[in-house]
Image: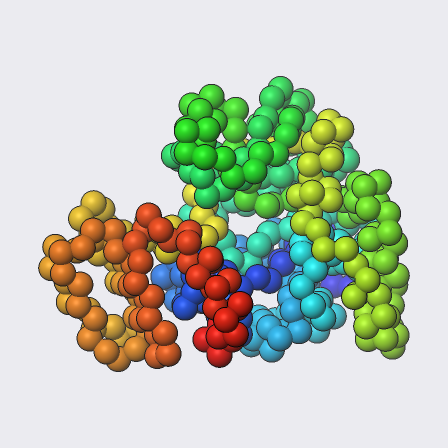
Length: 371
């Protein structure tokens, strides 16, 4: 294995899964949001994530976990990624299986590995501040902590989960580290407002850093059968038995998020710290988030898409066009218009989260051709 040019023994895991159904019809099953340029910088979110992590791990120490259907697109986006570093999942099994398998494979290749998991579809505002936070998390992980990077809230939001922190921890190389008390599911607005005002809460961005042995050990304590199965697959990964083992074992794995399998129990046991993230972050969870990212200010109508043709008068919100049609918006506030060759969405920023319910309805009605 080529030596990492970044932090010693640091390996980055990029889970590239999920459809992003709240961004339908822009994000589809065969072209999910991590394959879109939502930051508006000319690169996909996946490519941005890769470029952000290479200075920290070196490109030889990055593993991408994705579904079989998306593997060709991932390879096209990341031609530098070695085939042995692409972990393909036969079917969706939630984040514990994807991240756990990647960590188990990495641990066999490098028993001293410290792993960090970073979603493929998030937007980061300041790469230097991100690198500083990850470096601090890395130093905390060397002392056997499970570490998360929590985002300092800029406003009350009911779209994100929260991390509750308490006492500072004296960790060399990680002076801002705070003990994590608990994780909180997405709250209502009033509760989120109280969280932000207290100063003790961070947005949960799903970033986790730990020794591979610590991460898997914590998971083993909660989900022993899951970890035993993941290690069975990992042992076969670099052999001729990979496909047969994967086909036999993968369908038996429990579907559970890493938050439930590892993060929450570890926090409850007092084994987790949070590093405050001050770098600007968004998971681009819906069109309201996308509008907020690209708005030039109050009263603006953000327009995204190549060769778009949009006319507006006294309209605010966002228009995303992937068609050659003229789109006109008159006298509407906080509107969301997404025009694609085979589907049109019209909603408002207020109801942007409800797009997922619409997608679920289409699934029930068998409208798979537009999903």
